[in-house]
Amino acid sequence: MTTSGFSDTNMTRICYLLMSFALLVAVTAHETPQQVVTRYNNYKAICNGMGYENVRCKDPIAFQSSLTKQLENMKNQETVIFDKVSLNEGNAYDKTSGIFTAPLDGIYSFTWTILTTAGKYFLTEIVLNGKKVVLNHTDGRGHNGGPMSTSHANIKMKKGDKVWIRTHSTSGLFAHANWCFFSGSKL
Image (tube, rainbow, N blue to C red; front, side, top):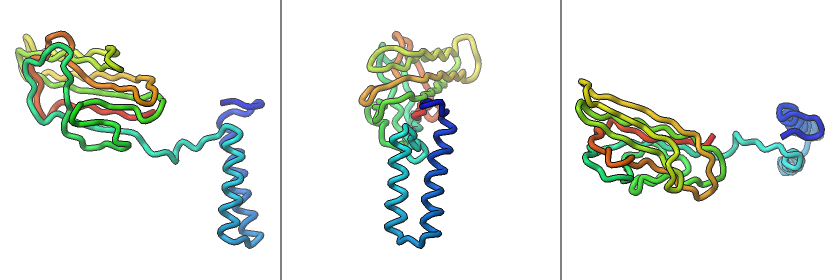
């Protein structure tokens, strides 16, 4: 946000300067701790009124999940449930449904990885409120070993919007347990 010719960087510097000044005055004036807190809160309110928001103080929203079961012959548009959660800051990912629900408006970054086996394939898509956003095509036909593919999507979401991974078409033939992942975070 630019206000009266000030850039975001300058706004940040002004707010830090005001808050530092408040602390300097507090130290030299021998104020009580309550007076220091009151003065700090007043300067913080001024900075907020100018449009400055310290986003580093907000709680993070991020999750990391994986499959614990091998998936075979899934139906068209069936949800892929990444049921092992190793990180769920903000508790926005539901491991029983496989759905991430945005707790706040913003842009979220999602990545998912699928590993199949030789001769099999597994096509997936990430969806926002049921509408396809990006595809992932993992194809092991004509290959030896375990082909793996990763897809990524940055999605603008409103509070309450839902994102999940589902099969694309009827192509959910085989996905390895412990080698398939779904993660996301708010930018």
